[in-house]
Image 1 (cartoon, rainbow, N blue to C red):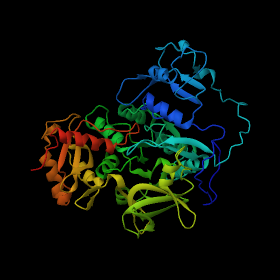
Image 2 (cartoon, rainbow, N blue to C red; image 1 turned 90 degrees about the vertical axis):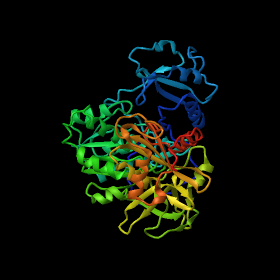
Image 3 (tube, rainbow, N blue to C red; image 1 turned 60 degrees about the horizontal axis):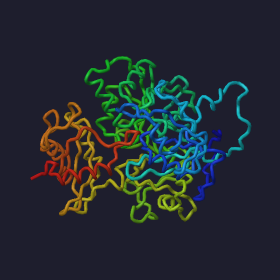
Amino acid sequence: MVSHMLPSFDHQISFTIAHPTPYAPVPLNPAFNAQQVIAALAHLEASHLIIGIETNLPRKPPRSNIPLLKQLVPNLRSPQCESEAVPSLKHIIIVDNSSGGTDISQLEATVSYKHVVGDGGPGQSLPNQNLDPSDIVNIQFTSGTTSAPKAACLTHRSILNNGASIGDRMLLTHEDIICCPPPLFHCFGCILGYMASATHGSSIVFPSEAFDPYATLKAVQEEKCTALYGVPTMFIAELELLQNGTIPYEGFQHLRTGIAAGSSIPAELMRKLHKVLNLTELTICYGMTETSPVSAMTTTDDPLEKRLDSVGRLLPHVEAKVVDPLNRSKILPIGARGELAVHGYLVMEGYWGAPERTAEVMLRDEEGKVWMHTGDEAEMDPDGYVKITGRIKDLIIKGGENIHPLEVENCLMANPKVREVSVVGLPDERYGEAVAAFVVPGAVAGGGGEGEGEGGLTAMEVRDWVRERLSHHLVPKYVFWTDGFPKTASGKIQKFRLKEEGVERLKSGEGGLMG
């Protein structure tokens, strides 16, 4: 990676993406099936694929990748790697992580990783590769929480500086030890984790191949970690292990900081992390893959209410504005809610091979500045703190009123009988949309009957809890019990899939319809 720190705001963004020089890595989601992998490789005209014999995913047994490889290269016993599905593919490099369970000598179309890796020892450095700070170093697929993933092109300059700024906000030093369960294929693990630690000389611990709350807490204890990363669903799983005694409550005294990101952090969860895991200097990060990824972040000494109610202030060399979603040229005043747009070194070069989709979100203003329109609804206060109130696409419009799912989710997370909740809008003949709450009861994972969740929680209790604390129009019309949510491999809830599930459940008569 080219070391090039920011001198100024002079970076110009182009919608014409030059080909990466000489190669750009593309980390793929391990949850991708064969068709998704083939589609990604073909879209990028990839020349090399590095893949393990097995893939480990959260809460699932290891998955063999041999069937995937056979779909990609039907004749794996051929001495040549030939793929009709991906003609550009020239080499498949195999990492044997199957503990000897697979005979890779039969995979003649592939090459073993141990035969191509260099030792990196003294005198083994590469000659000058003529790299430039503006070269694309990482083609990062978005997480796909609201739609199909897109391939965002990030540069040396954008991710190096972003990692450095993140580490600065956390006050990282060479004495810090970070426990990082978020995956490396995602910006969270790659940039907030690895790049922030590398730019500050900190140590970093990856507790397991796929997220495992038990392994994460054990790593914190055994390695005396000072920082812990996670998305809300990860932290919830970890707190549950402490609550039920699976992990003894000891060895967490070294923790002080960390990052909570990936999706909005319920205030009640934040308070629990402060109290139970001693994460009193926990920071909140906000961003998106397309912005390398962090654009706003709290500090370790921000007032608690700011860490509960905002995502902090902009990082250095970053500009932002709140605009009218229906008229993106109109900048809204301080305190008004609208779509957040971001400008600066951190904005991607564009989506690979998708100029139309790039043009939809990257807009040039009258001054020539290119702004990344995030699709997130936000507001800024006079002190520069940014508050994210939800995805524009996730807003529930009930009878002409905008309802923010996070407001209802925060309210329900304060109920001790609720372990996890996600709120979406479902079609409604009278109001256009109705509020629907998918609830994981707070006892043990598992659903109850149609009208009652695990631990005795009822749909009426859910509604009464919201009715007593929020406006009447925010009360869920539908309550669905669930064991868990459809999530990306990085732990984000896929609300578009919840909406689809909700529609199907309504057709079958579920939902605890309010009379």
